[in-house]
Amino acid sequence: MPTNPINRSDLGAGTSRVLENKDFRNLILEDIEGKAVVYRDCDFSYSILIRGYFHKAKFERCKFIGTRFIASTFRNATFEGCDFSYADFDRCVVPVLQVLANLPAFANVRWELLHNLRANARALGDTQHESDLVWQEIDTEMEHWRSVYLGQAGYYQKYTRTERVWARLRHLRLLIERYVWGHGESLVRLGVATAVALVLLGLLNAIERVGDLGSVSISSFLMLWLDSLAFISALFVDLPSVNGHEVVRSPITSTLAVVLRYLTIGLAVPVLYKYIAKR
Figure (cartoon, rainbow, N blue to C red):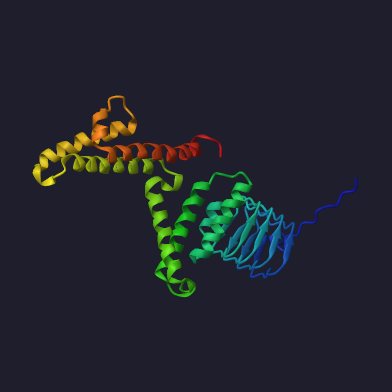
């Protein structure tokens, strides 16, 4: 069976293993051997880099604007002051934290890159930094929608009034998701949010039972609030000690407590799955 040898180029690094101020724009660069090479002030913009090997390479102030990386390895590589605007990674081994330290300045460009990095990691089955990517991506998305509804100068002035209203709603939704369950990444935040909701339902139940707030003292109302909180918590947990007459007397808060129970379970299951199951 005939075989063809792979001819790997080091792009002229030679024995010095250093390349400075080189212009590699608009090129198709295949099978590049860049192990432990230092790239300083080099420009790879709008190029397609295929099957490159850059183990322990160092990139200092390099430009990768619109660069496509395909099936390349950057294991243990470092990036300092590099520009990855509109770059695209496809099945590449990438030092995620290094790239995160070199994100583009504009939110819309940064959002696209983070989305691509997460897709690239999933294609390789790499979940080590998935949470880091999720939080960065959502932070950037929130910044993007905030810039849209504020109508900031430049890129964001093109949006209409209606689009700005929708942007405000999207930003609000993400803000609520962050504090309710950490965008599906935090059981602690979900627990805190559930506890706050139970306290508020207890307060609503106490008001529902009193009717006229002016007819009771503060101390009596506080005792009633604690009693209502105990009732709502028992109903939330579905304890057998729950009094049916109390449920009938407080239909609104009782229904909300049951809805909260199943809503919390529904939100907790995917979070637990991420922690327990192999992603």
